[in-house]
Image 1 (cartoon, rainbow, N blue to C red):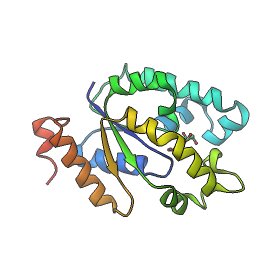
Image 2 (image 1 turned 90 degrees about the vertical axis):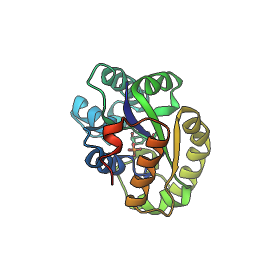
Image 3 (image 1 turned 30 degrees about the vertical axis):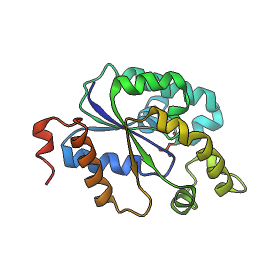
Length: 182
Ligand code: S3P
């Protein structure tokens, strides 16, 4: 399929990049976290609290499988922990071009220090948690990705321009879509 799939750590900008890219490329955007919340009828925090993390992880895999049966040419933003399940890598690749938005722990911390919607970061020392989670996850994101974009210190416009350029360079955008972005 030829979706554009965004992966990366919490706070790297997958949802915002997804929306901006969808305007730029005139494609529909979907967000696995939002699809899961809709299906469960409750927030991610409540799913973690009431059903536990393994249940949420299973919902993520189901969500990818369901997306395989929907129309493609979408932008798909994914939850930060989704690539950690090996079986999800195959599904991600089947869905399309996997784009990793790479961010540093310090930058994640600055962006999310007042956020209460990420259950995994509600702890004594969120910076330490971010560092250790990211150390574990970074190699897995790289392994799952077709393309990598560094986001630290860049504004949204720069990031979008860079993404579109890379997608063109690597042949992931068909001709007519390449001409949309000026
Ligand atoms: C998670 C990231 C969150 C959400 C859940 C778990 C993770 O998504 O799926 O809180 O394990 O990193 P975002 O990456 O959109 O914050």
